[in-house]
Length: 159
Image (cartoon, rainbow, N blue to C red):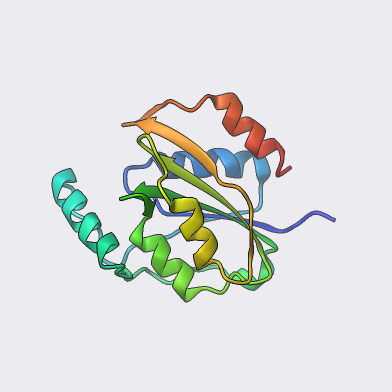
């Protein structure tokens, strides 16, 4: 029996969105974006300062409501950039507002060199869900450092 799939992600710079769209194109299912109620500033340095403060204070950034009923999905492919060695504050809010118990969660994370404790933090935040090993995608700006073959292999295990 094929599982119903939702690929959901948060992306600031577009990198996580790019990977989410690649996964969605190959897997199918539905695609949804986690969107902050108040957009981050365009100035990268301001975003870094704000993001660091939000992560350190474990703030839950307000997000727009999803136009998706999660009860209709067996598996959730969850994408996040790494912010200060963990998932982005918008993803923290999503995981605190939506119940993923009973679902299988496949995280994928984009980062500039190290995922820190992101994978462990996602497991902790997804109480009652089965959380699989994360796909780690290293990027520098918009340049992909992780080989496409590694990403394709991870995706092929979901098909």
